[in-house]
Length: 242
Length: 242
Image 1 (cartoon, each protein chain N blue to C red):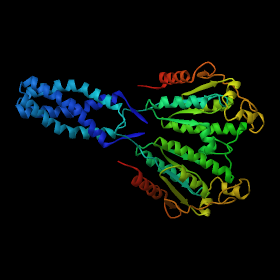
Image 2 (cartoon, rainbow over the protein chains, first blue to last red):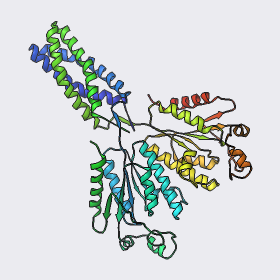
Image 3 (tube, each protein chain N blue to C red):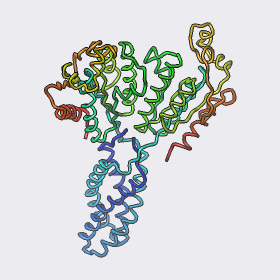
Image 4 (spheres, rainbow over the protein chains, first blue to last red):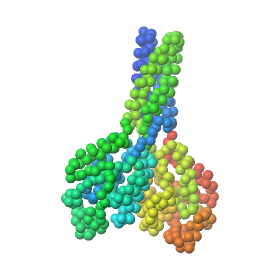
């Protein structure tokens, strides 16, 4: 949320004055044929109107009418661990930030680092996602859009998000489990297979594929660049007014 | 977050034109002594400049310079169950909303209803408060202030909030436990004493009084109206620019 500074109103007054006084001088000259008088009239007008313009700007600054709430959306990235959700979501976020809309990035990893012991059982995951839903909803109350990436393996929790937030756009990042393993430089899948990680989605816990997703990205077929373009184009078309 | 509509720019153009053209007509009349020509010049100027003004407004609408982020604050109400936190916080929130700043109300009860099984053990409470801290921090990233009311009985979790958020204002709602019991129409304290409610602050769990709070409200001495006034005055003085 922004407020307008006094300087902004002053500088706007000056740029406007340059346009406006030039027009006045031309009009007076065309009418009376006296350039000298036209310029003097223009000068007096300038001094007087810079002050009036400033007062007019500050008055309007207090008026809410014509300031429209921006409609927020939620991009919800779901998919197996290491399918590429965060990578693509990060890139999409950077592109959307450039559009000067209020937007937040929410990533599973950041939040789990901040608040430990969230847990990975079905109940714990569902509770976690419900809280994320509450966070997104509160942000949306304030016109803030979100780019959220969470494994979110269960249909019921993705449905809960859809029920809680508005303009929900599910992006299913589809990747073969063998592809995910090949990207796994930290050996998470190995630790899951050996039993060191419990309830690991794709190994010891199920991933329920979305029955419906607004966008499906098949990472075996589409490059990261093309995926980002496809998602950003979708958002621009449906949610960005110009 | 707001964006400015085209209509706003048009209407601003018209109000400005009324001020500006009147000045031009007066100047031209004073200089040339011919009211008829002054009015015709004013009319031509009007038509031309309404369009120019509109274009000038739309151009500036795309410029971020001079739009300043609003600095957010967090009002954190702590105190025993039924001490009056929510009642006073609700009233304070209504007063602060009138100042046209972006602000959210966060109440323990609403969030516990939305996300069940948060729990009341020390660990569960601390985790809960950490998540609320994350929520407030995310809102603050977007210039949104908060009015939060949570029993928050432990020093470590209130300290965590202070470390996570900026412009934190702790309001300790101080009430004698007998006073709280007398306000307890739903018999929560009775249920806690009988053991139906576990870990109930003030009965079966401790409340660690704040060592430092920006504002202390003694509800045995101060009326609700006076409490609200004291808190709103504090915020206006330190956090509201005009």
